[in-house]
Amino acid sequence: MRGTFAVIDTRAMEDNVRAIRGVLRPGVQLLTAVKAGGYGHGAVPAARAALAGGATALGVASLEEALELRRAGIDAQVLVFGRVPAVGLPVAAAAGVDVTLTSDWATEGVPPCSPALRVHIKVDTGMARLGFRDTADALRAAEFVQSRSDMELVGLFSHLACADDLASDHAPRQAERFAAIVNAFEAAGLRPPQVHLANSAGTFRSASWHHDLVRVGISAYGLPPSADFPVPCTLTQAMHVYAVVQRVAWLDEGETVGYGATFRTARRTRVATLPIGYADGYHRVLSNRGQVLLRGRRVPVIGRVCMDQMMVDVTDVPEAAAGDVATVYGMAAPDVWNGGALQARTGADVAQWICDTFRAHQATQPSVLSLTEVARAADTISYELMCALAPRVVRLYV
Image 1 (tube, rainbow, N blue to C red):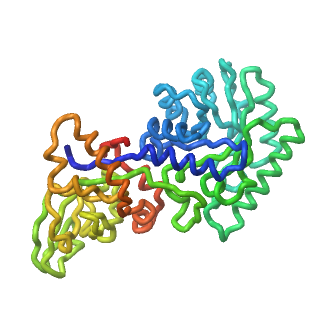
Image 2: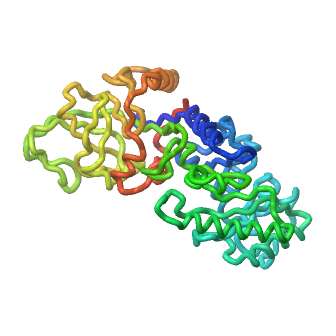
Image 3: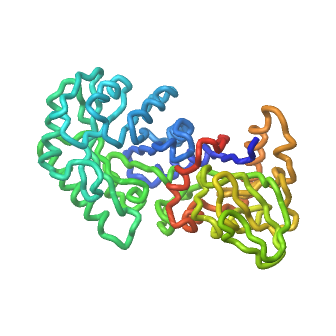
């Protein structure tokens, strides 16, 4: 009813995962990261779409996120990337959740686990975030897991820090270090069945980095790892955010707009107000620099982005009116949404009508304001904008 909503295209997610699978070496499995609420898309819908597209495993940041998937009835392999303290390990085991070993559990006193706890050992090859830095320490950790009848060594992995930077040799050097560690595990008879290194960029950059499993995040949601990174398959953005124009008003030349009066009109200007602001995840840094689509045309954000609202200049879109739908990012809004059509509809069919008309309009291949472009204007990355989308922004799933 507020007029701010997101359409999440789960079919696009399925297609993205399917397309990514097409670039993998034969036999390589695919894990899709659905942490942080599925990068803002919704963890459970994102997980189901990824599995429908051919993912065989899911990745989350915490045990709490893993348990959310289990409560939703998702029984696929789930790996917690972050550290789970010893006290949480029996909970993970009982839920059939894989955990990451990043430090010495032996010193913490691990409670008995039932069924056997599935463990992945993480090594730090150049990210300096989590994992064993010394191969000997990693091997001792593996031996500790093997010594426990209530644990199973399932995986060995590391994380690439600069895989999207094709001009840097950082990722190849990490891959070399990781390969040496894998060799050491093999020599010790400790190689687990799932060795994994590649993220989205690593997956696309080198088949030699695929190992047994790849971990894909941003690209499953339809965006490249970074703005200029070449992606060898077709990806479709899954998140589309819209806001209904609340008011349109004329300002004379020389009048100011918004907090701090940071924008002053240079001509008689027509200003539209949208019910979206930084509390919804539209960053304040986009004040006086962002753009939205309205009736298929780009219009600039003027004045400071407020907590709950922002203003745009629609002088050059004379037909723009209250009740029209602006595309904050994503696919240009269908024309049938304009002219107050959304507010005119009542009852439970509104959401379904939005989804049906979204699909019909999508088939016409309309223009798209990509998250990558918006992120560039905000001097950030698309990941952050996705994750910033607030819970109060209603998600509709198609």
